[in-house]
Length: 258
Image (cartoon, rainbow, N blue to C red; front, side, top):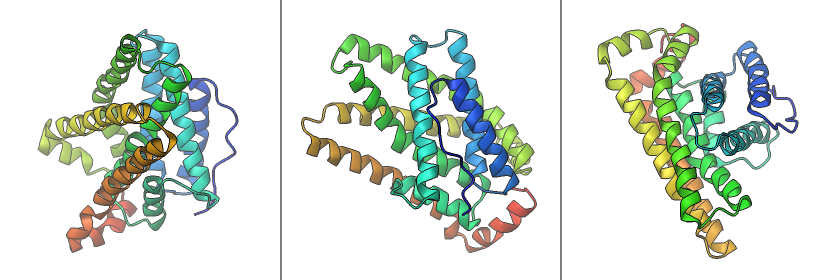
């Protein structure tokens, strides 16, 4: 895969992150890199988070922006690590390899990226920032942090239709008809999947915070890595159970069908 990422400067605000994402999306689109699917979804979500920060939606907008900026750094680093053959988290390596092989459906690319970033990266990011702020185990402060974390579920639920429209416009025209056929069932399923992931994220974050010594922390972190990788394998391998569907993937992508 040709490297299209520029070195990441120190990004301090969500606006910096969004500008970086826009520049990278342009390069991904121009090179027809399948990583553009998740990147486009992530950019939409980040822009929506920025709107919510400005509207006072979160209890502590300053803290939430720190989380979102640090979160983006992990994504940018994963891209750079893969492109330069550095050590890269297994869930991200899987997502990027599948994109490079160009044998995936659009929804696979989106879900592989979402899985790696939420299930693998987010618990580590939350652990880092909560440790820096010495929040744990203050129950009152942890409750406020968790409430802001859970409010993102509401944002993601509101974004499902917007993300579908974006994917339909740029990558998968048939999603429009699937969406009409399923009515609201697909939105309900997507919302459940994202909420489940983020609930599991907080549980894993607390396990990392509660680790009594470095060895225990490493065990928990490795477990999180392996769980995210296992979920990624399920996402990546699902079409292979149906030989005809698997073979159709390149054709559907060529004509922007699904």
